[in-house]
Amino acid sequence: MPENFLEKPLPRQNVYVAKGDSPYDNTRNVLSRMDLSFLKNKKVLLKPNIGRIAPKGKGITTDPMVVAAAIDVFREKNADVSVGESPIVGVDTMAAFHSSGIESIAKKRNCKLIDLNMGKFIKIPAPDGIAIREFKVCHQIFEYDFIVSIPVMKMHMHTCVSLSIKNMKGCLWRRSKVDLHMLPPVEGIDERPINIAIADMAGVLRPQLAIIDGTVGMEGLGPSAGTAKSLGVIVAGFDSFAADAVACKLMGTSAEEVPHLRIGAERNYGVIDITRLSITPDRWEDWTSPFSPPPENLSIEFPNIKVHDRNSCSACQSTLLLFLKRYRTKILDYFPQDTIINFAIGKGHNNIPEKTICIGNCTDGIRKNRTFIKGCPPVASEIMCGITGKVSVDFLDGKSETPDD
Image 1 (cartoon, helix red, strand yellow):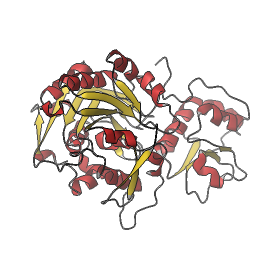
Image 2 (cartoon, helix red, strand yellow; image 1 turned 45 degrees about the vertical axis):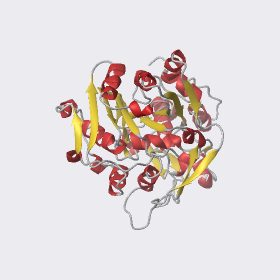
Image 3 (tube, helix red, strand yellow; image 1 turned 120 degrees about the vertical axis):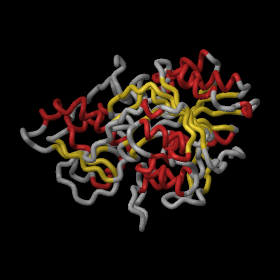
Image 4 (spheres, one colour; image 1 turned 45 degrees about the horizontal axis):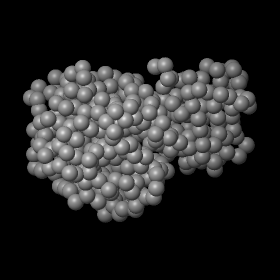
């Protein structure tokens, strides 16, 4: 682990914000205000949010020009820069880099792209861990001196927001990311286990710099099934908790309302108290534009459909929601009129209706005498085939949005 990977935060932290039409210029703006001279001859890993196959501008993946600016700035400081990612299960890393536009900007700069899923993992203990006591971490990150988290500014259906701390989940090895969604309740703590687990992760996987991409964020059902929201801002800071706190404020919420940030701050991993931060420029709050939060009930958009969700991960939720958005009308032809169509996702179900459609490997235990579509998660064509009994071809399989969008 890099020596300064887990340095304690300073009493008063500096956070920088820029707004404008150019994500490249905004990124250079905030980084120009920071002393990065210590990065000379250091190995720097940029960790964007490229967890899904999606085009730029949809609020799903980090804008390529933000990454381009980061590469250029760090190289000007004579650092050795690479870009790495470990996407959600079932997504090819290099395909995700390609669709996001990051492959193109990296190729032009001869910058190495790293599939963090390749090779072995390293187990690291989490001494402060409550929900999880050790993590399987992609081994490549230990080869770098300095880790930069470059997330998209998003609301999140499980964790309230997805910013620089949550983005480090993409450094966990392959399927171990799913483990954070399958945890039992923590006795004596009235918080979702995943939020406690992310705070546990922050005890051993904090980035040394956060660059938060608010060019186009996502409101509502983030991290991938929500609505794109243009904000045109970039937030940066050495204390990733502090940077996340400023981003929260710009999104119309507060870090104190985000469990994993509040828990991490209570453990002294970082500062989220806005009054303790030095934020530049002075009138940065003028750029606040509240993001719509996720709905409490996932079936709210589908009145004739009931989603039974127990400890599912965002990958399965997002996949089912996107499937229903595209094909809800079509699948109605295969059920009696006015019938409620039941879907189940997640692990740990006890009582669900007899004809429930079970989506994903986690529902294997309740599949008996029910329609079961395997996968982690299954793609749209597999879900359609399971419902209709007909082989289906869906050119959108594996994608968050249509290629033409």
